[in-house]
Length: 473
Image (cartoon, rainbow, N blue to C red; front, side, top):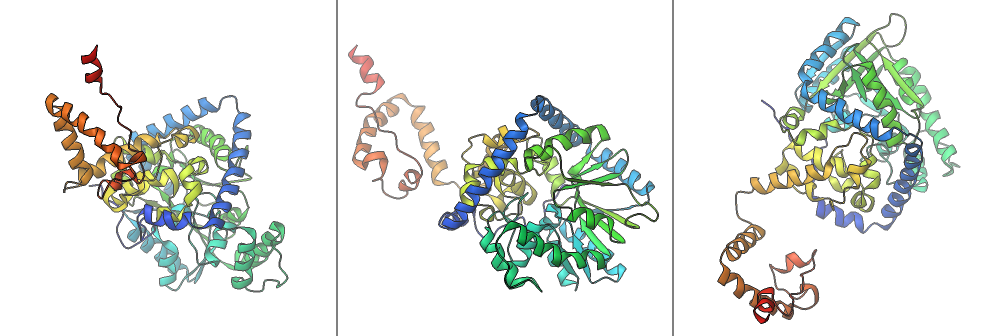
């Protein structure tokens, strides 16, 4: 039976509700400046290259249709993928949850005798808390993506799907490098070229002397068993080709049926995510090639709550996500609070609908409310996930799960009863004029009614009701 992601492992649950964490983030003016600048830059780049594609809407339709097909026959495609990977010399492991996935990867690394692994940027490994599991086993994980390296050295958490260190500016990154990076030049400046060169020097020997790599996967082609990673820096290519052992952790929803289907996503993803026409590095590997690349190839297929999401015919749309982050870059809520406020490794609009489903709605009950329902995320999504619909769907699930009546539910029940009785409704209309005593916009209402007007304006009642107007005429 479908189960949700286990407690106490991974990074899907925050220590605070979204409103509490957001208040602290909103008070950080530097954070807001960093976010505003970065999201505006990415939005502009993405809009420019999308405008160049005359068939963009048709590509979105195709992507949405492929994802819907995958969800409809996911077990069949995963078995086809397993058979193809195995036939090509790879080994497939099935992980029901984060605990099992961490155990599998840790045992595979330990079996090689290595006490260090190099890592390609991976949301799945962040989701399950793999770095912490490896460190507990005496194995050092080294993030090789520049932004992930910044986060790791700064003992920080990612705040964006595509740009994990988006909340940091150049000066802050320089300070982290000077403080944490061994052998860095004390005269290091905050010039981006200089910062990238420092990271390159730091990582070069690690690439050449680490025999085990761990990656995620953007896609997996069921018909051939081919795994795909797209990235912009080249660190992924180094991790995927130099080590002797390669371990890939992939959410089960990342499978696509055929190479032709992959073609659609390789056009959608770079434009929607980085504002590029194509990814600078698109790495594909199919099992083991003797004498070329890793000679031990493992694929860990991760569930960790995804079956529970799939079981919801409305909510399963969230599994269509290709992790482009387009929804984050257009979201007015994310732009002001940043990713840490969401508490999950998946921030922004997609995190607000995916994380509650992976953990169970009640464990992330505030996230579906972390939205203005403006719909910008739906317009930006390259696979047309109707995020506003999912937000409302999950809000309804949260309300239904509440066993005790709330102030709002009592008020709504009273309103329904009043509207069902004409004489009582007429009396209520007359009594509503007394709300003028509460002041402009209802700001003078006493608790608990003041909780409503903190975030909403109380409409001013008209001087004359419709019934009174009708009676006069």
